[in-house]
Image 1: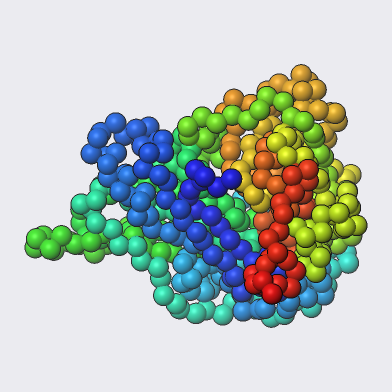
Image 2: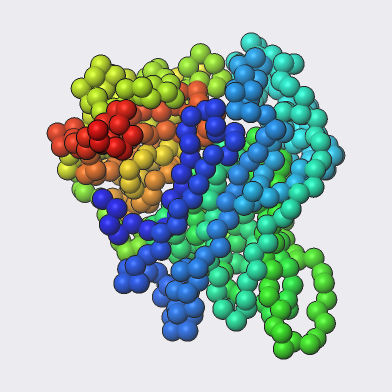
Length: 491
């Protein structure tokens, strides 16, 4: 199953009592030296290619996370009580910036200014409670119950800043960016440096040369950067929220190592950025085209699937509870006491509202529908993540899915599908605008129980998950020492 896999793998504890404690980790697997790599698509210079190989073997890891002074159960209780102190860390380091309301208002995107007018963001950069953002849930909400400093009341603090030292003699450096935030959607850029994005979710892609990259919770992007400076200066790495929930940001430093033979005095001046504190570009930029990330080398799915499942997602009753399939909510400890691996024929394992059972060595289509209810035409984007391996996104469209198969949909809307060079990864984003759908295709070839969920921890905590029992006809046998209660030991 794992032969040939490489890249960054993000690991997170999914029980809600721990999500706000930043219980996450990252594993980094280097590709085999013989694995096909896309370096010649970045440069055809043999020296560049050798330097890029060395860079990818020794990357800098940049983990972006958010932090709150509130424990996860306090955070969830605040949501329940209200109907509704986050800051962003880079490799566990950062500061709380209290910029003032005027500054934050001036860095709010026009779209959000219009949406919340005549109100504006507060001193923490958080949006006000208005009909346009809260919809029908504003009526029954109680924002007055939100604890001070959670949504407003900024308290500044100064912490360390992550520093990444590079040697210009290496000529190229690789950065692995990981969004380990609970629900932030930041954009990142490196002052005065372009980036070649060469890997998405731990898999090579056809490289894209960009200035900025926007990424969602759980996503991983690896970038190659040309070290074209030789002035022993610092250059700011900017990681800014894109402003859909809050005006907030953080910084790190790209530091050029001084040549010991260089006796000249370099001017210490601030690097020139292209992102402001609101995540808005200050000049023309090229940003990552996330809908066009063909895998490298080419890797297409099967032309036809054996089964199709419709995941009709929407809110259920409250603003923070969600369903992945028609109203059923997956409690986070649902399988904790009777794991599906051990009890594949239990009543829980047969619950079709929360479990999808597939046969081994079959191809499965998943249609994720959002905005399906008349009173919920728009939803915040969901980050669909399925455990156990990569998946192809073969289609996306607007409106309601009214087809019995992908073949039928392709005949009606051929431009909405791509079976030749679709994205191949393990995180997929649904649309923000109106009713819409995406189609995912995967190969069920790794028997076992796997979770599919929204990577926004608040949505997952509200029930937005479903279990897959892949390969029920080839279910793995559990070694006796790993039976329930054995702890890896035989009697």
